[in-house]
Image (cartoon, rainbow, N blue to C red; front, side, top):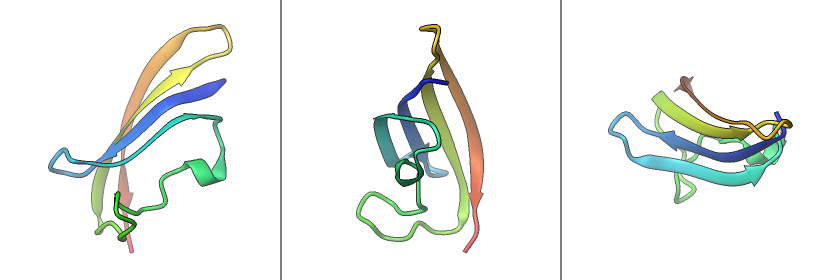
Length: 71
């Protein structure tokens, strides 16, 4: 991977709780820290993420998955 073009995290109702654009993979401050948009801690549960990735060869790919947040 070369760059994360966009990453979005959604709650179980499909509401966007986090978004970040244009950062390098493994950029620690760039990841989701389990907080929702207003800085409040997100409740435990399953969240879906969607990421648009730009590779070194110029190819772009969308990846997605889920993460379970446990407090």
